[in-house]
Length: 387
Image (cartoon, rainbow, N blue to C red; front, side, top):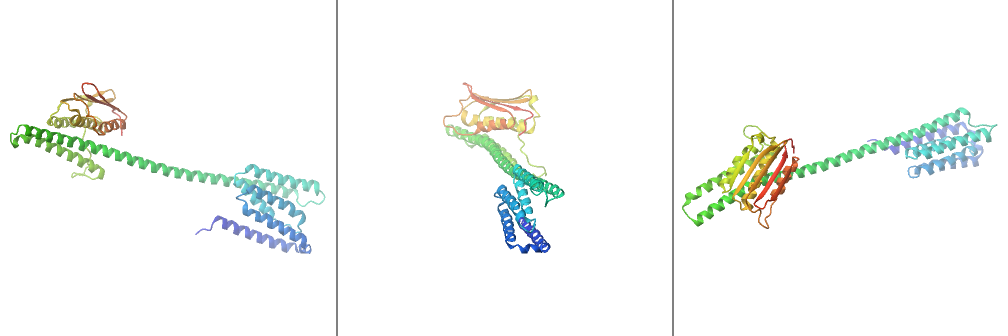
């Protein structure tokens, strides 16, 4: 397990300090002859180095304290330990790394100007720092500030990358939830269209047959046509339901090909035939130009006609319905008009909303209105519409 970065820094600093102290004391044995100055020097070293513990919270004040300790240490201490100079350089690095670039440059410039002034003016006859050392100190300060700024830029880059990764993950989760919601709505709409139409026809056919039989009983044979129509409608409902569930389960049919809903414009005649068996006079016109539509567009047109006829059979109390499918430029137009009275007051359902959603999902639009003499549903779907 790798050691924390702070522990590594502390260990390196301790080793450097120990080597520096031991080497300097061995070299300057005469320093022990002035214990007062030696104690004052060690006190300044302790203050300047201890201030580094708060360098992250108050980087600029800590650097100022280290600089003041350096300014007081070298004139009074008989031992020229570079620990305070190293502490000041580390504090200067922290100031730059924390983003206080102007403060770091100001402190470095003040330090170098003060050093040059003291060496050139105050102690002109007995210099302690020659020109080469001043030049090297300038380079060290420039390098320390540059490294601190690079470190800050690198940390900012890593934070930005991390934020982008988190944002991408959040966006991915949002898109996944949105896709799941849209898929649930699509499945609900598909099942509503598949089951609602056929079960509504079954209900209408059974109700009409029972009504006729109760009025004029002629024996069971008169129920045969209604029962056959109910059988066909239930068979179609089971077939479409099985196909839809097969897609949801991602299973294959007996031939090994994926099971997909086969509904489309080509099956509108079968759809209207079942509506006629329920007692509704349906007239269908499908232009040749409207054949061979893209699968999504063909399915949407089929479902709109299916839901419209379901509404007519359940709510409109109509006798006649006219279904027209034609092409208008780059659009396919689906029009269903009946001579009924619209939905009864209080009738509930989501059929029109579902049809409108189907049209909008492909970039089209749907209009549903009461014409006064019946009800009209017209959808306009682009041929290039893609869900």
